[in-house]
Length: 63
Image 1 (cartoon, rainbow, N blue to C red):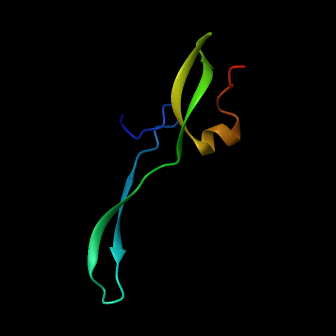
Image 2: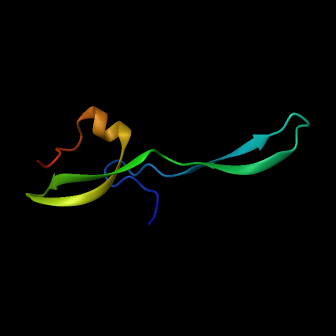
Image 3: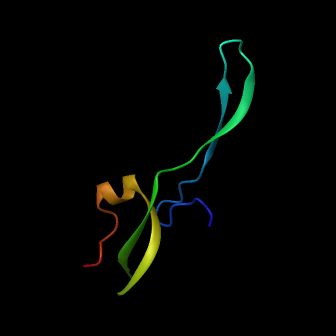
């Protein structure tokens, strides 16, 4: 399963781990995705949504 928010399209970002000796290795910053039952186009579907979209009210949770 890809780590992409189905509402806003947020994806993993790249960065670096930097040690005390300044050794640089690659790392990923993944978005905080949650599986949510939501109303989409009049039907209830299970979608992967980032927590920013849940908090801002961009989705309507299904009962």
